[in-house]
Amino acid sequence: MKNGKCNAAKIEYAFDCGYLAVSDQHRMYYEQWGNPKGLPILFIHGGPGAGFLKDDNRYFNADLHRLIFFDQRGAGRSTPFASLENNTSRHLIDDMDKLLDHLHISTCYLFGGSWGATLALAYAIHYPQRVAGILLRGLFLGSHQSIQHYVGGGVRDHFPDAWQRFISHVPVDKRDDIVGYYLQQMQSEDEAATEKFAYEWAFYEFSIYKLKLTGASIEDLLQEYSYKSLSPLEAHYMQNDCFLPDDFILKNTDKIAHLPVSIIHGRYDFICPPKYAFQLHERLPNSTLHIVCAGHAGSEPEIEEKIRAEVDNLSPFECIPVG
Image 1: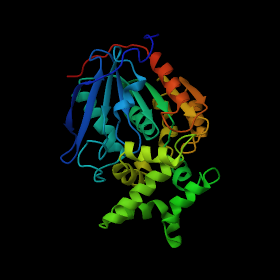
Image 2 (image 1 turned 90 degrees about the vertical axis):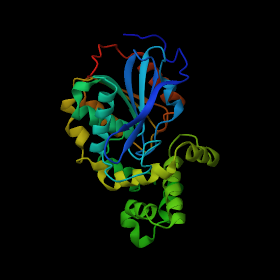
Image 3 (image 1 turned 180 degrees about the vertical axis):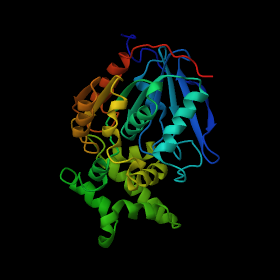
Image 4 (image 1 turned 120 degrees about the vertical axis):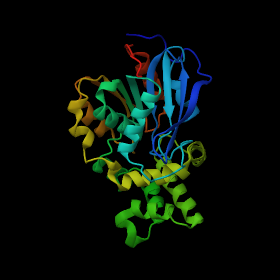
């Protein structure tokens, strides 16, 4: 069912924001945008550690959608900043559930890109009764194979320069555990080393992020996303196989097979190769796969256009308030 042209009304302000204590240590920052009575959509940012951005609302319609944005543990405005303590996939999944309870939302759509897509699928597998459907962009499965592609040299054939710069900061005798070495340096008491390795980790990611990149645009991305949380949290999750059993998502697709799932993926996504999106699509009978001429970033024009089209086609449902 059509809901009208997506993004017909500009979203200019949040109608609600605050902090939710999700543990004795962690406080989650969240915002709600759009129509308080609109179709609820939970936006799940990438990284881990990237936090959500103000212009993440650009895909949606302020008149039709109730948008819930939140910063995952350690990311954005959530506190403590960049904390790795008690920060695992299961913690984040349960945080999302607590947030929906706090906002009295029983059912919602999930929207996630990259790591956000991993987390959306993992949440839906654990709590399928709370999910009306899932929109995914730049799918990352969080499997050992997909992690090794990203941080184990899978990109070297297409980005030998970016890969060489990434590993050049690691002593040759430590290159059997590149992620572990980066993480160790980012957690050291040497502030110069912490800054250097956080910067270089993020520089590597953004060097392979889009189809067309310049040095200036990489620096813009480094300013846009806080690499001081993105880098250590990404390394923390990659080092621990995203705190998921291997192939957790593909082995549990039966739990979400009834859900409508839209997958949007760049043909030239070198961070998350499209073969993983195709593998998921083959296992979900109610999924659609859109492979477009783009890289990984959600800001690629072809990806943005397809996201808006898919958001425009979301079907309304009755959302019975919780509590």
